[in-house]
Length: 225
Ligand SMILES: O=C(O)CCC(=O)C(=O)O
Picture 1 (tube, rainbow, N blue to C red):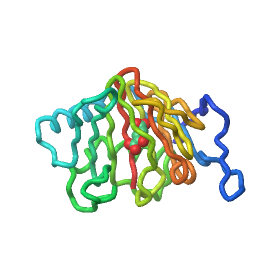
Picture 2: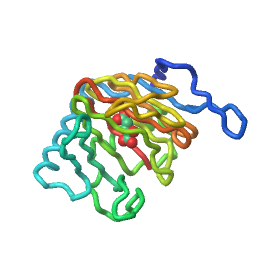
Picture 3: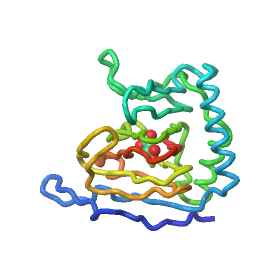
Picture 4: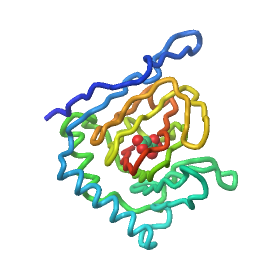
């Protein structure tokens, strides 16, 4: 079986930047796949996501698995659920963002492990990739993810599956923040429902990425090694 490569619908010019005087493609090796998961798969995966959210809200997950910020301003309510490995996002008490290797989060649920197996079987991901962690993002209307590069200690490729609503993902060597959930990028592509975005090389190492404020609820699941 092979995953169907989806055409990359981008609303901007190819992302060329100059580094040491040389032109490089900022999103080199970026791939998008479609139709790897069925409608039934979507239902089962989303049931698992919302079950985890409910367990998190009830305080029944490990402390660092579940995070739901106080929504004190437009767009900052994105829920995150980390499984398999914990990433410390914010600079806290002088500690830089880092991967915490200790067992401080819950393990990946079986259905998410099955997603990885399917992506490998369908050649979306290489057979030798070892993905043992994932982050689930639940965005409500207006929520966004600010420009960032996934920590270099994570093993590439990264793969993100989109659910419930399509949205643009923005890339840029630098991304200008215009307001809460509003950014100016050098390159953007549409992530349709069910699509799998595979990020590696420049697209992961060099380019920052972000999601603008979403018009309605959206869920993404990102796998990393
Ligand atoms: O929601 C998405 O599509 C992107 C997620 C992401 O960039 C992240 O979790 O680091």
